[in-house]
Image 1: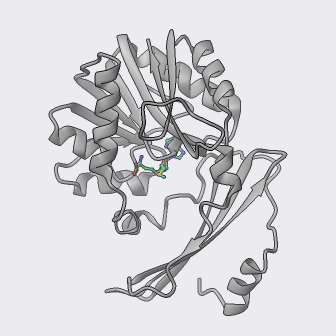
Image 2 (image 1 turned 120 degrees about the horizontal axis):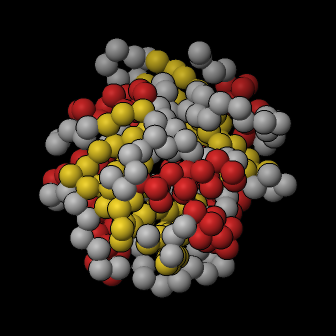
Length: 270
Ligand SMILES: C[S@@+](CC[C@H](N)C(=O)[O-])C[C@H]1O[C@@H](n2cnc3c(N)ncnc32)[C@H](O)[C@@H]1O
């Protein structure tokens, strides 16, 4: 669909789109059309440093996992990097189009589709579950996040460890996702506008893309939703799922989160 200038303008005037009363189907329409362009979109993301940090957390918590699940693995960038570092990794993601691109990584990441809020994982089959890049913010319903944590706990062997990060309310409120690259030269143009709904703790992101490279032009839109969870809420849910030691870090540090943290990493030990 081709967006008219008037439509782009109405977004930028700040017209606030509605939030669905209920989100019945998780992920419907998210990470579908964008999948072929995702790695290009993320080309500036320092995945190696992210994996360095995840490994530093493992070391800090005295864990040397062998069997690792990259949960909500997307196109498999994190999982592929973990394989390169010698781990035995499997990926799982809700979006089939994203999962398809796991095969194209070097090394390829074996992956399957799975809803993280209904994890179908064999009991005690994993040493670690890793979920990076605010993937679990996409679980919008607290009971569904609780079910995710319970499923991860069950899938971990004794002394297993779960590492994930979440955007905080501060980040989602501050319009982190309102951005564009319309003045740049990249053949993938995008314009995103985010809206924060404080009563639901949900951020709606209206995303418009235009591919101007080979086979293009091609325009499409996706609407994404992320929910903010407070640190105490997350810790409470992890404890309820059975995790015995839970530590939160201000993103990419070993310091505790503060009121100014925009991303929090959680380390939950079985
Ligand atoms: C921001 S992307 C991050 C992908 C990947 N972790 C990375 O670091 O590149 C978020 C991912 O979460 C996935 N996702 C969202 N909701 C999910 C759910 N309920 N279960 C599994 N994956 C989900 C999306 O399909 C998407 O691939």
